[in-house]
Image (tube, rainbow, N blue to C red; front, side, top):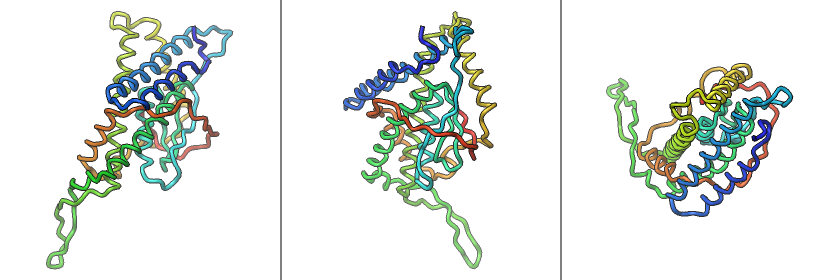
Length: 285
């Protein structure tokens, strides 16, 4: 049985191998298979560790949830909210809860260490994919043919009159919409794989198995840890609140998210930090 406290280095090495294979293929169907395989491996490992923790004896040290800072970017950098959205989407599929700093420069992740490690590995790979794909979309100029509804105020006979006009989509608006759709699609893809793996591990006729109980205990332990540890105030609303809408850019981002390959990360990021009292809003995942 896997030690409940051991960081699953072998599992992370295997995920790294899948990432390298995905990076080396130009076949979108192969890339999709590698993404699904990476998430399946992560979910299966998380289930095995949950069962192992449930069988920890009194003499063994039981693994517990932790809180970790995830750096996102420097203050003032454009697009940080979409970067946050990508990490939160990945975290949601891997049993990690998040609080988001008001500046969107960092995330406070809550979960078991191995689950957060998996999120960091997936994020490091997919962030490169998202930025690269959005850069290519903007450079192609495809967004210039789209328009967006915009309300303008004009004075007629000394009185303000509001009317709606069709205006060209700004490059920054197109980029943000592209990345928002990309992150949302990645989140759905990973969630589908997780649901499939958990269904295979817990068939309907055996919902009261040790696996099901172990996963339920894990969920309750994380909920309790989050409620005791989080200092967040409010709810993170994502990037939509401050971004104009571009249907064409979102469609392009969604297509890119469907065929995204995991990047070149062969090992996990090692950046860590000491936590201070966060000025955060909650990120429900």
